[in-house]
Image (cartoon, rainbow over all chains, first blue to last red; front, side):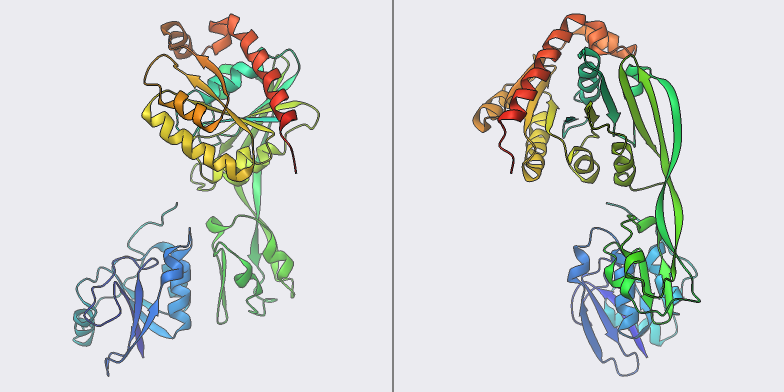
Length: 120
Length: 283
């Protein structure tokens, strides 16, 4: 099982990127082994719109079953929900800390997006 | 012939100039207010309305029975308005620009045309001026498709004056695209100059010739004039900063109602613009 975490950098010590669609990176972490893959999100940073949708599609296609992030808007949430991916929002600190929290069962998953969509 | 009136900076007097030009000409003209987010040309023009239409965008709806999840639509869409994930297909109507591409690439014909309300278009007459404006539906984030619909009301053989929204992004480009000439209205301030430069650069990429009208010409500094000289951009007209004009404006009166003697300079301006268009070598 893999968890996608939005990240500002490409290591487990990196800080969680509060933005989902326009996160710098996604770390695709296996919570049991803590092995991870890095997904660069460069292309998305430059999209004029639809970054959340694209990011959600990327993590779904790379096999993530859960997402840990700061904020998730309605369109990304719709995609993740349709793919059966659980989303936890309001997560901060390092990737390692977030994964520790997950492994000790302290993560609540969201029922709805926590921020509005935005334009322009 | 199409003349658009744009500015970069907001509140410089685009609508005042567009209305004054339309009201000064002796030939019939059209005035199309393309500022569909905040149309206000009608306040000066006071048209007799004769038509009101609701306009829609054609967006895709999925017939899940026919969809083979081939992804052709999803790969084509530049706006992420349609997405295939495994055996799920999602649409995001608010992202759709209604280009129609998805319908063309859908082999199993699983996409059915659906419609989304964009806004309203009203048409009417003010003397010999045919007036058209669009009004974007509240909650609709995209104005260019409605501007496109407003521009479909342009009659080929008449002079069309387009009143553009402020700024230099998509709504402005959608408005000025295809114009024979653009009048840029600015004011002689650092703010006016900064935004004027952006507007000139945008028009340069579109290859549209332009000239400048300086409004409230006797306030501020002389940087705009210096810039125009150095760039070889024609200064078409200066409108003075006058209490009388401001008072009339505050009562919803157009520039040429307040100062009828300005009609003649606007007529000359039109002749000059026609001359400049002829001189311009087209590819």
